[in-house]
Image 1 (tube, rainbow, N blue to C red):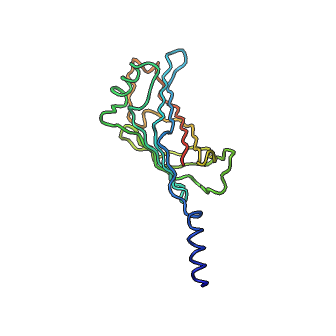
Image 2: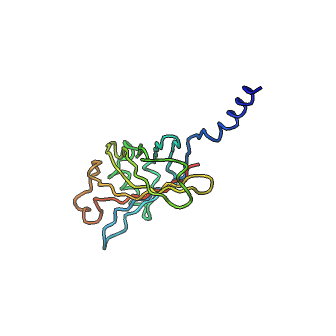
Image 3: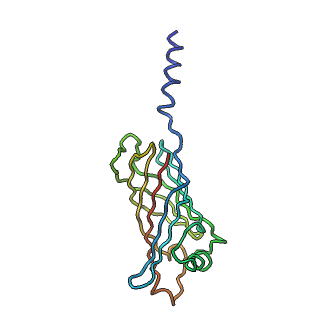
Length: 179
């Protein structure tokens, strides 16, 4: 009888302890490469995906380059055809680990974590370390980051005649709600 009770207790407790991956397909990624006094160079997508393993703190995200939207349609066309060559490099991705991740120490107030990983853009890989803020909301976990990327690191060439209008350092903001 004790064995049956113990087995029952373990089965009941297991769903509480076992945490499946948390995912989102509606993450927001925004980037800006604007230069003062010139036309705004900013794009956003709300179709980025993210997967978090709550046991290990492993996190990965993927976005299709063609999903970014600009205010000016011509910028979108130039971005895809001339800068990002999205026909040959259709996605950007990140795979990393959230240092010191522990589901139980995260509350409803944002908590800062360091995230180390590999960013892949335009077919090139680069190790990066960023800061992310995590907090529990709406039955899930919100992951927010804000970091800079240098276009040269990913062999993204800005034509010389546009180099005064487009920043080489691009600010990237992400917001994911994984459930």
